[in-house]
Amino acid sequence: MWDEIVRLLPDFENAVLTGLDAEGYPYGVRVRPRADSARQVLGVPIPVHAPVQVGPASLLCHAHDEELWNLRSFLVRGVLRREGEGWVFEPRAFVPGAGVGGPMGMVRFVRGSRQNAERYLKKRGLTRPSIPWNRINEIKAQAREGGRPPVVPSGPRRFDPLPWVSALYLLSAAVGANVAIRENMPGEFAGRKSGRGASADFLLGTGTALSPGLAMLAAQSVLTVLSTRGGKAETAGTAGLTALGAGATVGMLGEPIAYRVFSPKTFDPAKAALVSALVALPLLTTAIGVRRLLTR
Amino acid sequence: MTEAGDRKKTVSTRRMDLPPEVEEVFREFRTCEFSTLARDGTPIVWPTLPFWYPDEGRFLITTSIGLPHKALNARRDPRVSLLFSDPTASGLENPPAVLVQGDAEAPDRVESSVDGFEDELRQVLRRQPAGGFYSSNPLARYLFDWYYMRLMIHVTPRHILWWPGGDFERHPLEIEVDRVG
Image (cartoon, rainbow over all chains, first blue to last red):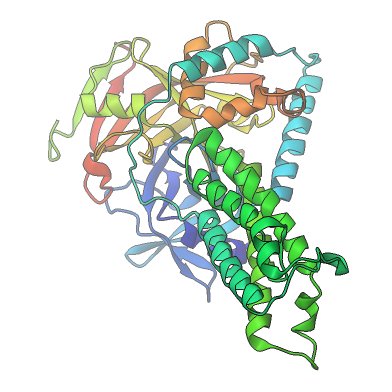
């Protein structure tokens, strides 16, 4: 539990600390907790005027983007204690919320919510109600036609690694194409050659031994730009980059040079570094893309 | 309402005379941190989409029967709070943070119809366009039908406190609600 808390806490600017006031009502304030790993407690600078009492409390970290999506949250249940002039929060249980458990967490969330719903209905002898999907979709269409409300960024934008990783890959692939053309290393995917030179493979074919073809790199450039836009363009860009990333990884791993440059007899440190980048970057692109598509 | 001595003002429910900056927070903030009390008294807090009805002087929070603990807790102990402290996407410049402490009513009735709730749903889908995914295809509708089986939680404010500029280090301003009025 403690490891989870200290791993996730730095992702959030501050947290909502909620205790109880003298009447037993929840009383929440924003604080910046300080982790004391030696004692596994959090120092919480509760303002002096806040009437919170010693006893049960919780700490919530949460965030969403400008379109109320990419939700991330977790809750820590615990106890508030006085320590000198200050306050200490003693964690007792970690409760993951949205977006912190990865794809498996999402699966558990959906399955758990379905089971909770089933239990709720069964306990009351109710049948599963039908949902008016057509009416909901009509309202959804009206909401879309009405346009999205104007939003004003109110904080620093979250760093989005996808376009940067993709751009790094494009740069590495350009270097790879340059090396392959200079040393005439045409594509040899799974041992099959086109019979043309490296230059023709790059300009007209599926690629050289160290890069995809020009058409794929051009497509990736367009998709990278799309992935930074909102709405459907972003989804299309992300989906395209996810697919291209997977294709590029397989493409590079299918080239004999990917193994030759690491072999003790033919080890080539410069090309080994290049091949590593040409495998790792598209793989990372795919992983980030899948995560983004699943949490949209 | 000043920060010293005269920090409290009593108003009646129904149509409340709230400071415009507070009412704006109720209208424009996308989420509030909604607290209910667990059986052992621990406040359980999750970000939630609140609806403010100024003419009724109360809030509506809804939760799915797939995530029913908010409603179950509120039925057992009606003392709840709504903290408006995350202005992301509200479009407000330097808004106050607002804490509403109140009493909840959470009837044991599952709502699956959207009749009479169209405006609220439209607002949610405008503010959270990706939420439309739940109704977008047969697989999503099968996996997420529970999302549209809702429990209603009405919250009548008892105290409303706010921190100008969201500065929690300052003494909050406060309205105590006279629920008899």
